Amino acid sequence: MGLYYFEEQQYHKSLACFIKSLYIRTKEFGSESHPSCGDCLLNMGILYKRLGVPLRAFQALTKALEIRRALIGAHSLPTAAVLEELGKYHLEKGSYQPAYHCFQECYEIRKRILRKSACDEIQRVSCLLVYLHKQLEVELRQREERLRD
Image (cartoon, rainbow, N blue to C red):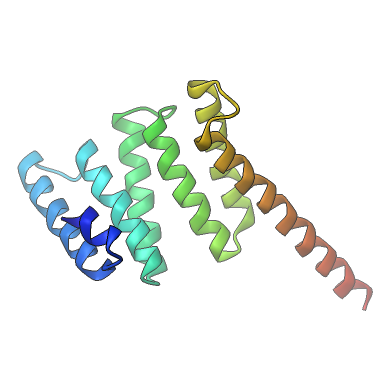
């Protein structure tokens, strides 16, 4: 239901479904440290970000990353998916260094596993890295101009 509401852009309802799903899965598996809980947390992080609740978004994405690294593997496609979302979070916040690290790690994982530079997942992160690079150049130029003034 959470994905349905997400596709219908009913983000509050979608979030409520994922929160309920996380509660059920945590109760069923005995803790939040289960891959299916990581899936809920990733979706919740995306939704919190869309709803303008950045601290909750960061917490959910960070927990999802911890779970996926520990249980699925640090160099897995599910881990790369969380790194991409976490990188976007940092980019939107103007935290360019953490964004760069997330995108770079995501890119390396996908490139190693998928091995096709034309793959959409690799190209998307590559474009995010290029965009981030341009943003950094603009910010550096602005700093230099302020220092000159």
